[in-house]
Amino acid sequence: MDKSSLKSFLVGICIGAGIGFGFFKLTSSSAPTVASNTKPEPAAAKPAPPLGPEQMKSLPNGHPSLTGDDPKASADPAAATAAVDNAKRAANADIGNFLAQMDAAATLYQAKKYEEAIEFLNRARVLRPDSADTLIALGVTSSELGKFDEAAVWLRKALSLNENDAETRTELALVFMKKKDFPTALAEAERTLKTTPNQERALEIVARAAIELKNTAKAEEAIKRLSALNPGNPGIASLNQLLSRGKTS
Figure 1 (cartoon, rainbow, N blue to C red):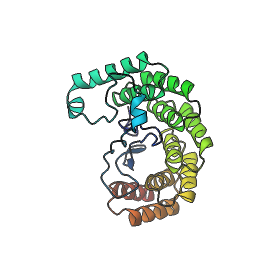
Figure 2: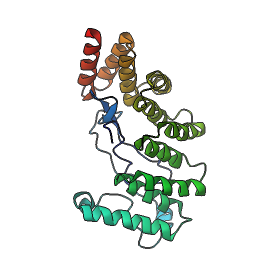
Figure 3: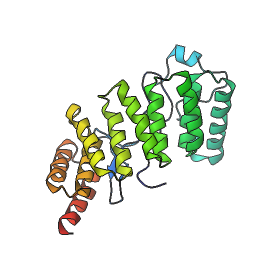
């Protein structure tokens, strides 16, 4: 799996809160990698908000924790395997439970079992065809598998439900970066910035795509905006290095 892959499919699923994703910085590799958020704060993914009482009641008996905050699970491979098995068992025991299918998919994603995650996401999609969470998750997971065309289809479907969703459109731009379709990546990232000017990841993608397209002025402008927005962004130095190389090549 290359460095540009999404590294986290936020632990836990919360209905109404949506699925969170890892954030990115641009390095000297071919595309963004995990690092910065849209705010100047630590890049580590935060746990999803707790489920409400009614949502908790919808879970089958013995369902594993949705918060993903068990330190043993992250440190112990056996515990991680058990978490996967438990989530799958719970989902299989209650095929009609949307939340259980999504949680199994998230657990499998974290275990890098992307093909299996897709299976559970497809179950969830049958249960709630218009769930943006499911469509986004299908897009992200397909991207991990290198199925960029499929990923774009799922993300565009999610955007059809909310075309101004900046995070989802940025994920779409990232898919095109990974596909090395730099003109489309640039167009989608710039579209994000029209509605959300301070979307940090979109600025990173604009800068990197512009560098790849030899558009020095656009790259410099994006890096300037990124520096003003978050001077501590660790991707800025890498972008400047790539820009300098482009000028001398």
